[in-house]
Amino acid sequence: LPYEIQDIILGYLRDAPETLRACALVCRLWLEVARPYLFHAVVCRPAITSFSLQDLVAFLADAPELVRHVHSVSV
Image 1 (tube, rainbow, N blue to C red):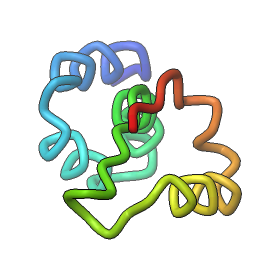
Image 2: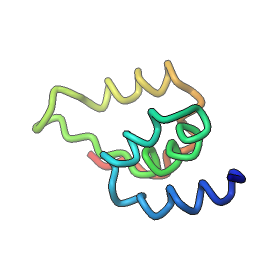
Image 3: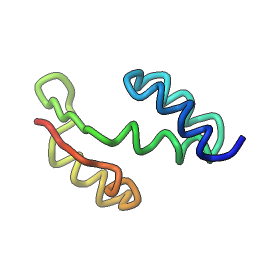
Image 4: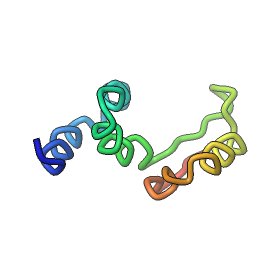
């Protein structure tokens, strides 16, 4: 299937992050299609997990290709 069709299909899953994460493991193309949806709105809840805002910054510094997908960060 063309990239655009796969993007439309995975776009329907934008509100199902667990399913998108599973799709991202299928193949490299689906990983590239799923990433913008997975990283569009990042929520950092250090009270719930041990993941802090500093951890997020370090993670994005190690993976600069993901930064372009992040449109909002909530703390």
